[in-house]
Length: 253
Image 1 (tube, helix red, strand yellow):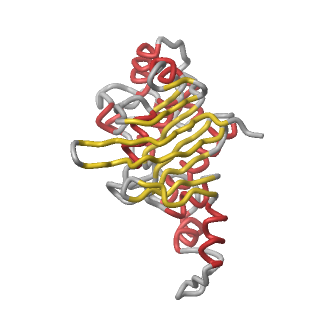
Image 2 (cartoon, helix red, strand yellow; image 1 turned 180 degrees about the vertical axis):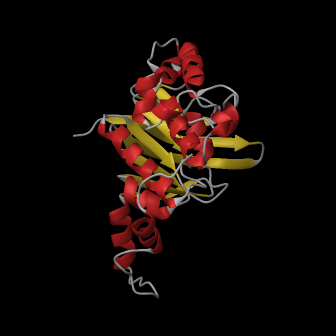
């Protein structure tokens, strides 16, 4: 049986009279890719920021790998990796310089080239962050979550704005990270991405979890209600056509 690595129990978050998270509960299993899905303003980012120790909760309980959020936030910080947004990097530093900077903050000794190899960026080691393409920046962003060798990483919409090749490449990278035993928590607005990557997803709307299961089971439950698509489902989509015609290889400067 898989170990539960994150437990969230009756989590609430209020901002004055606004109730952003309304008593949600869920577990994340060790080694799975868990998706937190929902429209903008649903409460998913707030929920993740609370688990990441970045935002205070109003009430409820959160446990991460056996550590209680209220009592041991610093222990939780040691075992998680959080994807930074673009604004979190010094644009004029090289990738090696940035990795060494973050390693120093974590008090970790790390070979930057080994980390860059993991995300296929060795040839960009001396390049400045501002000089990279969108896909390269996203891969580097994920690399920085691995500096402290975390048990859990949090990825916030990691493929937004990427072309199809870069997007599929990032999917492969996320799967590879999971294959090495790391638990991955991901948010995305791309339902096909969640369907391909996630072992389970929780769908949040207006601060409540309205569904939680594997993508396959959620789809089966919908079909069982008599739902039918107005258009015949084909065995491929336009993105598959694009990849087939232009190739899976990344095209980056």
